[in-house]
Amino acid sequence: MNQLLNPWITPAPDARPEGDAAEVHFPPPAAIREPLLGMVEPDAADRLGQRLVTGTATLWVTGVHGGAGESRLSNILAGARPTEHAWPVPEDGYGKPAVLLACRSDMRGLKAAQSALIQWASGAAPDVELLGLAVLADAPGKLPKALGEFTVLVGGGAPRLWMLPWVESWRLGATDTGAPGREYQRLSADLAALTN
Image 1: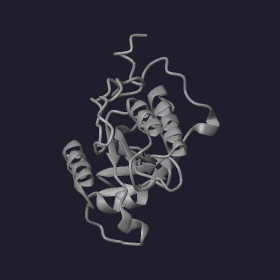
Image 2: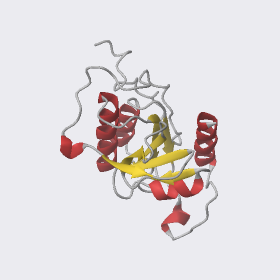
Image 3: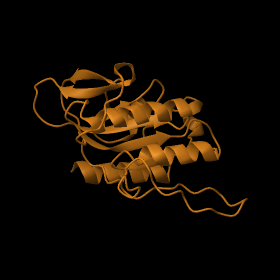
Image 4: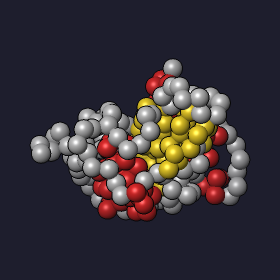
């Protein structure tokens, strides 16, 4: 398969001299926007479940593993509600819920995100409008190179990718609901534009 058409393979980020501060890298939007015919679905053990949701939300935040940050993102994104680690299925059967997947930037989180994206791309997930993947830092500091490269690879399977930094005040128990930094404000603005 041509690598330029393969949504799971994206070009490596540009090399920078050692010692330069790491910048958040947003790969170009992936070619994948909806489930693909012929995509093999993941094993049943690797799939996200489905959950009937009641009420309305502008955005449903789906954490792909425990501790992914879905509750925190739901608190800071206007009109968002968490789905408790499952694909949302409207109880009334109407509508196509807008979904943001969330994971942490460790290997466990990224592999869970990859499985969820394969599930969605194979058509094994319920009918949702997947807006993208938010990868929340799992620790303070720079992401190791191997994890950074894998994040870009996994993010290539989502319609959009947001890489979000560590927020120390959350670790210390802060419950503020405001967006804590530039990247979170960009995520909020992007999602507002996509859901209006």
